[in-house]
Image (cartoon, rainbow, N blue to C red):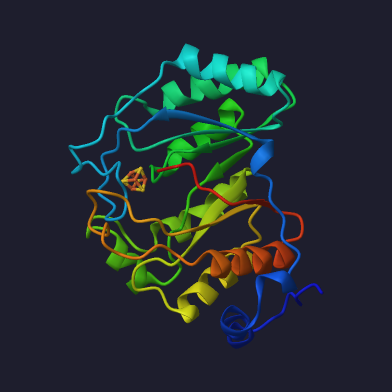
Amino acid sequence: MAIEKNISSKEIVEKIINSAPEEFETRNNDDEFAYIQLSSFCSNDCMYCSYSRENWTIERKRITAEEAVAEAKKQYDAGKKYILLYGGLDIFYTAEKIAAIIKKIKEECPDSVLYAAFEERVYEDYKVFYDAGADGFILPHRSANEDHFSRLHPMDMYPDFRKNVLPIIKEMGMKIGTGITVGWPYQTAEMLAEDIEFVKNLEFDLVVVDRFIPQQDTDFESFAKGDIRQTEKVRGIVSELLPDAIILSKLELC
Ligand code: SF4
């Protein structure tokens, strides 16, 4: 049974707490995507992420433009319709360098739908990606609750930036994508409901619903994993509220 679009926050919380995943019709478009990671270098310091600039224990990698285009073409020829080109905030990969890769991939894979995901940037960069041919941009809002966002990020990351820039990207003409992570440290059912309302109200074209997995050598490495059934339930609720959206179950960004 499809959920009514005008469902209230209270009813969403009630569904999060009392329903079962089997009650919802869930979609999953994971298999339609080619995932191309351009770089795992990042100048941000998100507390949950192993790619944080403060983590010196992991091996970083950065592929070349030629390698990125060749991999996209290979997967496109193998039948992948959607391409996700992604990476952290790597000062090597300027917006112009990324745009050149986007342009080349769109030439080589003409019917593909290309989503780019390169974190928080100045507004002009998103326009550069759009002009190069990107069909969409994924910027996970992490938490719609600003107090909660602040508990997951350092003080130099503003809790409202992502929420404010996503409508601007949409107005430019790009599709927009985000993610809902179930089981974040300090997350409540009410916060999850805020996330669901946020993706519903902004009518996202793509939503990743995954669960929190603690990563080694991060501030949250000792926290518990998100619950699988709770994650399936939230994925089902989002699938029903956004019947035309692409739904993914893994966020291959970090
Ligand atoms: S979550 Fe993204 S922005 Fe934050 S440290 Fe990881 S790669 Fe960088």
